[in-house]
Amino acid sequence: MPVQPLKFADHWMFIPGPVNVDRAVREAMAHPPINHRGAEFKQLFEALRPKTQWLFRTSNPVYFSTSSAVGIMEAAARNCIARRSLHLVNGAFSGSWFEISRACGKEADAQAVDWGCANRPEQLREMLMSGLYDTVCMVQSETSTSVQNPIAEMAEVLREFPDVVFCLDTVSALAASPVEVDRWGVDVCFASVQKGIALPPGFTVFSVSEKAMQRARGVAGRGFYFDFLVFEEFAQRSNTPTTPSVSHMFALNTQLDRIRAEGLENRWARHRRLAEMSQQWADERYGCYAEAGYRSDAVTAVINKGTLDIGKLNAHLAESGMVVAGGYGPLKDSTFRIGHVGETRPEQLQTLLDEIDRFADA
Image (tube, rainbow, N blue to C red; front, side, top):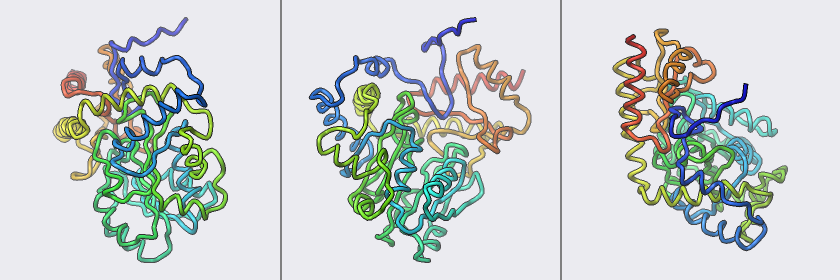
């Protein structure tokens, strides 16, 4: 039986990612291929860089990787860890970054807190005072648990240790929550594009400070595909080291214009309103998994007390063209997740919440 194509206008994904993509962005992605070593690509590259710097709130150079964000997790390990890294772990993705660094042959330690909890600045300070670490890696919005770490407070601690390279995963934060690379002193900041930026998956944007680039110059074994120095060498010629997804770059160019038209602060505020709606509903009906005061603007992990069969819920929601996400990893059966990121509007989220209530009360 042939697979029937999805009708975009008839469905809406309330999952943490991939997310729905605006028609104008999809049309931009359908731009005919161009020579990625030609003059037209150079113009596209030079248009995209300042727009992406604006999104990151940085004057640091930015780069484009045809990979998932995991690629830049590996890049941070290979380029920045000279002696030993400290990973702040509070969920699946921060834990994966720790494992990635070790898989790259790097010395690494995990400062882990219970899932559902945020990492704390006082714990970070205590670990850094040991003098063991030259790199710190943390996640702003932990998608598996819906915890949002207090990055501004963490950044204040890191200012006390100027030789430590600060690497930050903003995968489910960028374009949804405030990300302030220069204000926070972030040395490597990255995000894949299928969440807050609301593009199809397969592409990652990242920024690198001069401190991180200088560290890379002294670190052996950087490889090639994710070598920061190679990215910079090609960026000097307004290009990428390897064949990029030019289609993503056309789409990103259009979407950054759309984000600017909405207003970045307005976009943050919209996501905060969506998060408050979702979290208030969850607290009243089931409970939020993430601790109060440290909850993501992009996703809400809802405690499932055994009253909801998520498979049956999604079958019900599919009749209205909607879907939510199950819990992640060990939280598969004890939580479900509502993604409210990208292009979602409050009226759409309210429709979803009403439909879940209708299903639960039936």
